[in-house]
Image (cartoon, rainbow, N blue to C red):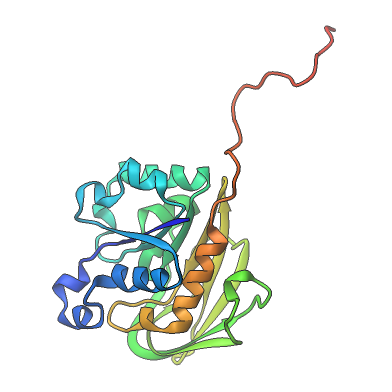
Length: 239
C-alpha cells in the first residue's frame, strides 16, 4: 500500500513558530510517523509542479492524506477533479483539520463545510463515540490535547456515514471531529485536530488514529462499477 501525504507547506515557511514545531513540515511529521508504522509513504506540496499530484503519483496512491489552510483557492480545479475521480475509483482520502474547507472535500461533500472557530489555545477532549470502529483501535475512551484551535457546531457537512469522534472544548463547544463517508468505491475520513501552531501531529495517539485511518480507507481489490447504457445479461423475449 502506498500513501501520499499532501500539504500546502506555507505556514512552515512564513511562521517561525510553525517551523520550529514542524521543521520538516506538517507533511513530514505525518509521513515520518506513518513510515515508522511500516508504510510506503511519499509527500507532495502545493508549490510543486502539478501540486506534486501528477497522474503518475495519483495512480500509484492508495491513500491520500490532505492538509490545507490558507491557500485552498490556489489548488488547480483540474487537480481537484483528478483527486475526486481517484476517490470515486477507490483511493482512500484522509482530510485533516482545516482541510474541511479544501476544494476536494467540499466537492465530495456537496455542502459549504463551514463551521465556528476560535484560536485560544484551549483544551480539547476527543471522545470515542464508536468504540467498535477500526479507526479507534488502540485508543482509550478519549484523547486529550492540552492546546488546540476550537471548531464548533454547526458543522455544515452531510450526516456522516459513521461518527467516530466527538470533541468537547474548554470554552464549551462540541464538534463532530471524526467522520467517515463513502463516495463511489472510495472511503473518506475527516479528522479535526491539527492546528499548525500546536504540536498535535507529534502526539502518539493522534498518529495512531491517522495510521488506523490509513488501514480503514485503503482501497478494496475490485474494479469500479461500469455505468451507462448496459446490454442485457439474459436474452430478452420480443414482445
